[in-house]
Image (cartoon, rainbow over all chains, first blue to last red; front, top):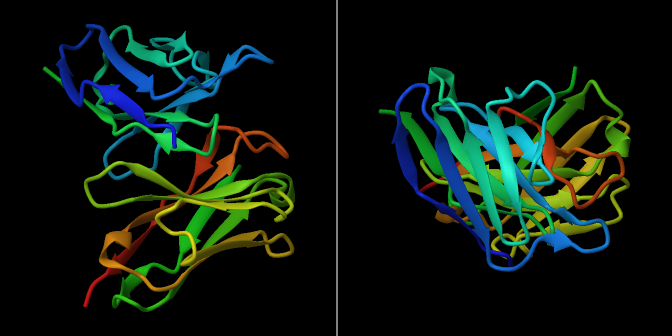
Length: 112
Length: 122
C-alpha cells in the first residue's frame, strides 16, 4: 500500500496568515503517461463529511476559494491556505488515488 | 443536486452482521463508481470498498476483505455494504462517496454522504 504521511499533525495560525500543510507519499503517485499526480486534498469540518478541495495535486474544485492552492509532484505535496479565515478551521487530508486509495492521517488547522 | 444518504447504522454485537445502504439521487448513478469509507471516532479516514460503475469490479481494503461485500442496484439507485463478522475495530462512521469522473476508476471523490454510525459492542 502507498502510505501517505502529513506534517504537521496540527498547526495554529493567526487570521490572515499563511497555513502550509505537507503530504509525502511512500512511492511516486505521478503517472508518466499523462504527467499527472494522483493526489487530492479534502477539508473536513467538525461533524461534517469531507469536502473535495483539490485534485491532480493542484487543480482547485469549482467554488473553492482561491486562497487554497496545491502544489507538488511525485512524492511531495503541499496545501497552502494563503490567508487563513475563521471558516477554514478544519482537518485537512491528502489522498492518493494512484493505486487503490489511501489517506494521510490528517492535519488539524486552528486559529492562533 | 447530487445527494447521497446513508442508512442502516446502529449498535451490533461482535460477530454479528449489519447491512448499510446509500441512496443516490441527482445524477446518473449507473455511470459512476462508488466507494465506502469509514472514520473511527476521533480518527482519520479509511477507504473500505470500491465498486465500478457497472458492478463488474470490486476492491476491498485488507482490513475488511472476506467479511464485507459491496454491491449496487442501479434500478433503485442504491449502494450497499454487507458487513459480517463485525469486530470492535469496525466501529466508525461509514460514508458512501462518488468517484468524480463518469466511468472512472482512479479518481478522487467529489460527493460524500453525511455518514451512518456503526457501533460494535457487547
